[in-house]
Image (cartoon, rainbow, N blue to C red; front, side, top):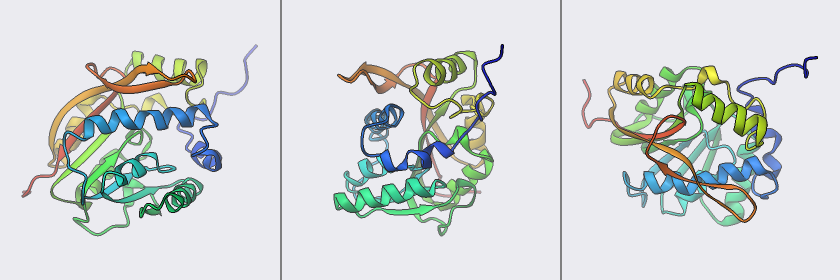
Length: 242
């Protein structure tokens, strides 16, 4: 007998559904997202000095990455389509005394002027967007010449599907079932081509994955040598284009 209908894929409603618990540490999968921030920043720190930089956190959800970057001295703006998550991010930043601007919107149509930011950070997002090429074009538009695009996403192959869908969502509950659509995962070569097509100077890619475990039984994360599952990367907008 079937177990019931398959979960909706690429279900972004989960971010609003748990917005009121985003900063409580009560929800395991939300804690997992929080635990990924230090590993990401340890890598991204190599490519930018955050102090005084105008930074866009594209797909910021409830604000974990935005707050971490703000604490490094950056002038941070966060944007996400999940309105309740944005409200939670705004409230928490205010309670912490952090001056972070939060907006509701999507990567395909960023509500910012050209050349507004020094850095765009985009983590756990590209594998969810409707139009990857348009998002990359918008990132390029809002970046100043010489600006950095720092990102991570998920590779598209059987191993990544096993790790992210079967294990993380279905078995371990590290993410809600239906969070991802494996058809929307992005091979590194595809992303590199898309970035190059937008005239970015693309840097090396590296892996991101579990490196330890907390007392609560949650994974901690850091840089890994392989890019078979989650991978991080950088791209630079040239000083001059054309």
